[in-house]
Amino acid sequence: MTPEEALVALLTGDTTINTMIGARIYPLVVPQTSIRPAIAYQVISNVPSYTHDGPADHARERIQLTLEGNSYAQARALAGEVRRKLGGYRGVVGDLTIGSSFIENDVDSYAETTRLPVVRMDVVMQHNG
Image 1 (cartoon, rainbow, N blue to C red):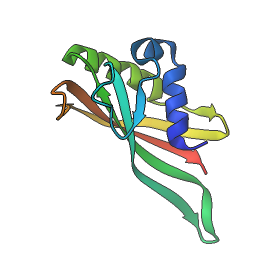
Image 2 (image 1 turned 180 degrees about the horizontal axis):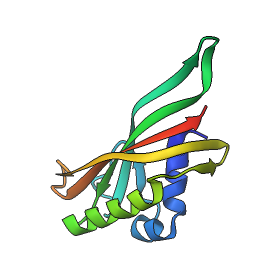
Image 3 (image 1 turned 90 degrees about the horizontal axis):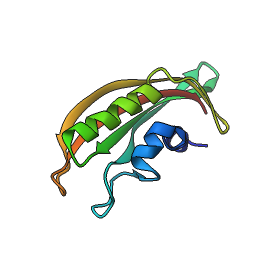
Image 4 (image 1 turned 120 degrees about the horizontal axis):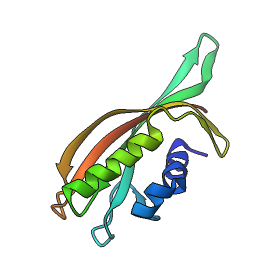
């Protein structure tokens, strides 16, 4: 399982977040025709770890989430639930062990195409693999 697949599983498996977005979580961009709220995700960086013997069995990945809402309050509420779920998360999802997950930052913005409010959030996951 990739870290992105684990992130999707964690978010859609959370009852509160699932109630808000259902299955509306997409790679790269939320389609213009999608119902909001919705989430898009993209890998910003994937930094493997190394030892003197070569690659280690863990990596650090930064995934940016774009949390889109119909209103600013809705986008911020979704961001709060994602922060609750992923901030400090440790555990196993599928065959991926997440040693730690934290929210590095978030910033308010708007979607260029729809002019709807968004929160862009960077999630950093340290994991095996």
